[in-house]
Image 1 (spheres, rainbow, N blue to C red):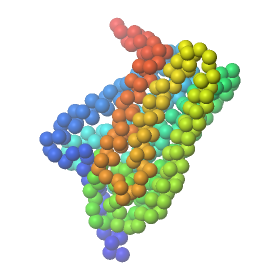
Image 2: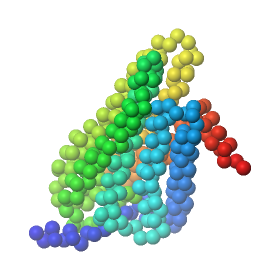
Image 3: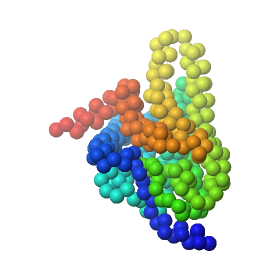
Image 4: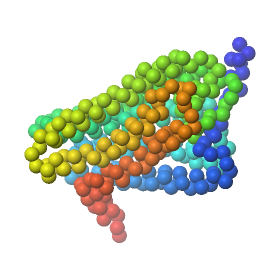
Length: 309
């Protein structure tokens, strides 16, 4: 009973961040502020270009605009808190920590679902082009986005509630730059067996299912493309998928590295992998999709042309 009463004193956590050396804080602040501004501006340009160009009013760009919006929200959940910690006290309230974790998982899994939806869109476009317009109609696109944005919130709520039942009594120092499940569970004085079982089962399903959908879609796309007789036709088909495959590799590679491992093996070295899927992927998305997509580059040029005096 005394241990339970002691938890009332844990009203905040200390986020140790990427470095504890004082001389590193200002350079890190400048670096991540720059990355945040690039992420916001880049994804905002993608959204505006898609919304303003009639030629980009297709399902693929409809999904891309929502992916860009989610990336803006995702990084806003993480980087502003990091910027505050670089220049001031590294504390975050208990409620604030759980709130950040909730949105990290909700928005991160929304990204995952949207990437699966985009892979399905490419599968229909390449493998069943004659029924593409009827299959990927506006109602279907809206339902897919609604599902991708709503299901992750139930997943995130489950883990937040399970974490909230744990007892924290020995330490409130989180050796991370954000509130994540694994480092928080390491601080718990109560058993985390249920949490670990749920992570390795439900969390694995939530992560692996979209990835399997993407894999299935691209296997079918590969088979269909190999049947195209002309080399130019093959290049055109692969060019519509290259950007998406690059983002999928960055996103899922880092996520699987972090979350499909036992809690006991989690170390500070996993910070780099966390940075890849939380910050780096969101920042690079606008460049990856625009540099390899002629229609989107043309839409961006039109947008910039309208803004010139």
